[in-house]
Length: 369
Image 1 (cartoon, one colour):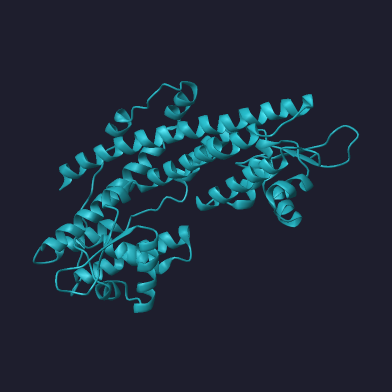
Image 2 (cartoon, one colour):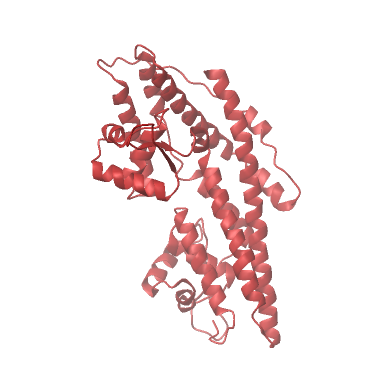
């Protein structure tokens, strides 16, 4: 990589930004940095990758040894240039298939399995008397279970729709046939549990979800516990009620609520004549059921915005006179425009899928309740 490259800072900024954002989406920061650097520049040495990613040479070499194999899901190939003893690396994938691969991986890999929920539903049915609180929790767990089932079934069949969108910018995907082919059945389980209580079932749900979610998010156990506890309550709850439900300390619950308030994912109310605060999740169970689609929309919309508001304007403001630099400026301009186009495809795709899933899940819930 030339030391006189007038675009070096914008290249570094782009790679660093993509590393940070994909890290939030649970992708390996090192591999993401290497891949985006090679799609941006191509034919880079380990020294070049060190400049663009900001990673140490040992970290880069270790990552390259993992992905520089023929059958890697993110293939990186090694080569040499004429009369040059250095090792060079390049990515045979273009931006389009890589972003598509990432999108499908984000939406399907690490998706949680809720196979424990049928047992909880049967235990809820066995409780007596059937109160409004039990009815609410049963509906909440059932919706979550159905949403994940439909979500996983649908995402095994969507690649042809994505390919059509990539080829035709005016195409709007139709999920109706995919969704009609999905058949959901919930077989009741026989349960014999003496002295089972609603509190026991709530705590078991939180424990199972915490075990699954912690592996994905990491280091946020108390926040997840409190968040899930609020989902199980139809009405706003006090801090004391959350302490009882999560079996956490007052300090930890208080810290979790403060963090949730900061993230704007909880609403706080007070009752007339009382000083106590009442908390409720700002998201409904319907939003949580297909929330991953919304989150990906948010990530990709932010990428689009950065291309439009930062990288393209900054690139335009760079004045160049040499012909080679003019060609490089044109190439980078097209690269950032390609980013905008491809991420826009997946924003439109996830928006259409979200709307179709939302409507279908409402129909399914009506039929099974």
